[in-house]
Amino acid sequence: MVPWIPQIDDVLTALISLACRGGEQLRMPRVYSALSELKAREVLLSGLYFSITGAVCYSRQVEEILRSLVEKGILVTKERDTLVVRDQAAEEVRAGLRKKLPSSAYRSLQTASKRFYRVMFGKRTRPQDTSAG
Image (cartoon, rainbow, N blue to C red):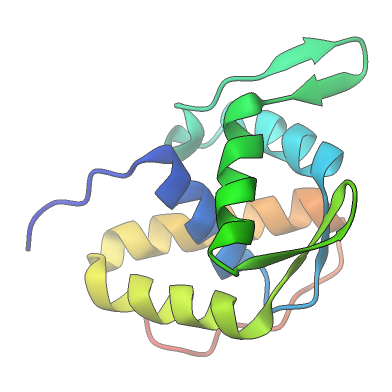
């Protein structure tokens, strides 16, 4: 199998799709700050760039990736700064990742996605992924 060389848009798509089961509301400012916080620990996020002004964290790169996910139908715009994860789309991405990635890369993404979920939504737990990885 050819080694997976992740592009940052693929990583972000995977994080959201693995973390969320559908219906979760992602406030864009919170997404920026969560990813900025995780960047220090997650090598997969090392390609992200942020500008931080006071308490405001922003990334044009993340904004473009989120817009792309809206165009692909994975996310749906709810309000000006809120996106909702579309159930079926997240499941399709997860199924594709399981098929095309080596298990070690998939596990790395799962671990990063769990951290992303905890940072985004606090200590609430999400439904367990019972599928084989």
